[in-house]
Length: 350
Image (tube, rainbow, N blue to C red; front, side):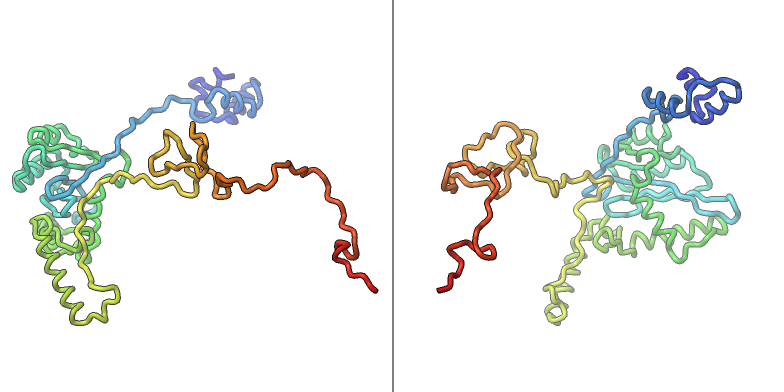
């Protein structure tokens, strides 16, 4: 029966299909339920064909504490004048300042064009070897040998998103959404020059005029060029002056401007959270230091993992008056008297 179920003929069919087919051929092996039982015992109740095992890709965790430390780049399509015509927009973004350091509009997606854009942008930003990490998804241009060789020769570390994971390149995707949700973004571009003109206006606005909520409501160019501290200090003076003039308007005290994020992460590592609604284990060699506890009763054995006792545990000094054991199995007798009262509590008439 197993040979029949795992054969090339029936490898992709369910037991009900196999059972019916064999009956039509005049052959009865067993019932459908028996087929399922035997397949389950041999760990073959799901997929019986050889499956491709994908490798376990490591999640990228990238940290930027200043400009030109981590760049993210991607390619998006802009619709042309006719159906199935597109222009390809290459954009390189600094994840710390959100500043678009380089962009290019082309008629096709090409690794050579991507190489040219990356090389020109690195030279323009004066990036030194071993300074930059360039992150992207796993598109054909991003994983090409020409781009990899260029990054290796320039001393740039490359990073890629995991396959079939949509949130490993969030900064580029967010920037594309900002562009395509602008009210002046058209459904289609009339020609290549029309698309270039739109991109020039948009990236000029995005870098120099757009107050980005992710960087303390600063413009990307001001943070990228090191003007953030001066701008925040000016905003602070303005808010303090407003508070001095009308303190009754600010019930929570002197208002403060938005703070600049100290760092920008791609897949920040998760912090270790405290275990809630679960009693920690005391004196356990494997327990973290924050959960270490001492037993409330002195002299209590501490070998091994001993659960902490609740507060109802009696202290060191015994408060039990008698050491005699109580017979909890004895049935209490009925109290004699009138209406359930004890004899000494009953009232007698003269």
